[in-house]
Amino acid sequence: MTTTRFEIEKFDGETNFNLWQVRMMAILVQSGLKKVVTRKKPENLNKTKWEELDGKALSVIQLCLANTVLQEVLMEKTSSALWKRLETLYATKSLANRLVLKQHLFTFRMNEGEILRDHISQFITLLNDLKKVEVHIDDEDQAMLLLCSLPPSYKSFKEILIYG
Image (cartoon, rainbow, N blue to C red; front, side, top):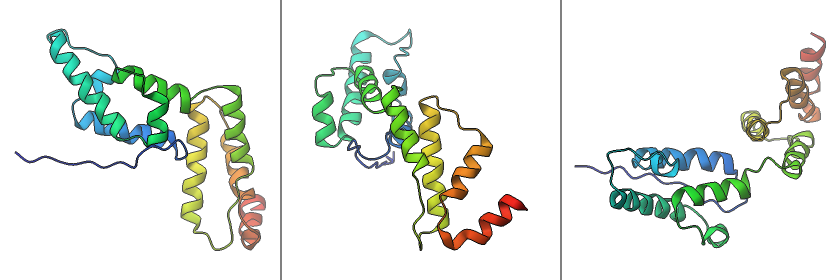
């Protein structure tokens, strides 16, 4: 029997929580532990086995957290409680979080010499973060924000797209 090893960058509170969360859930799915974290206990599973799986899921998540984040959630004793606490801390839909994300989007700029593909990828990440906290930016505004984020060297390109 072969084992597949998955690696994920430890979440340090600074990196993108939404992307880390997607990767972490993928690891939990591959490990057969997603149901434990989402609290979907199969009826045919006894309490002891469920607690054993929960301990495994808890440890998998804890091992993927940097020390600073782990200290914030150390008191959580189940994987589902830990997952919920991380969401509360880092994926909150509070007004302050929404405003900070909007500020990042509205002040987002590409530096000269930066690769356009990387810039667009970062832009899409910002939009996905906003979507996750239920902020909708319509397509026309997204296009204009992206065009406005481009450096002066893209002036002709921007004018062609705007004026046709």
